[in-house]
Amino acid sequence: MTYTKKMSDEPMKYKGREILTLKQIPRRVRDQRRQYQFLTAQLIKYSVTFRRQIPEGILICWQDKKFRIDSLDKAHEFFGHHCTAKEQKCREEIESKSQD
Image (cartoon, rainbow, N blue to C red):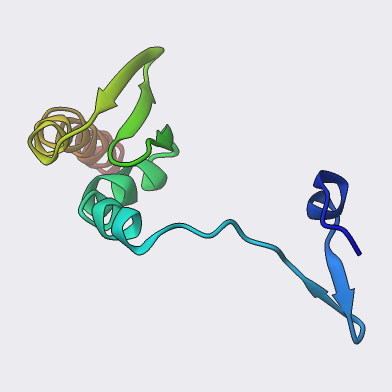
């Protein structure tokens, strides 16, 4: 059986169970991505759209603006400026609701 694009879109079945085909990512790239985990966890938490860049970096869509983060320094700067500000805003909203 030849592996084609159509076959990759449909799950394969073996003994009644579905087999999902995943793209293999090299270890070096996974290790580089692991360094950005502190930022991606917050982006997922706040449902912010982002895309991983190869070999290293993240493309983030934040408030209709695109940010290309391609170094850890930029990632820490973005996290400090945008994510902590968003957390502070959420805390203030929660506190104001609890005071009502």
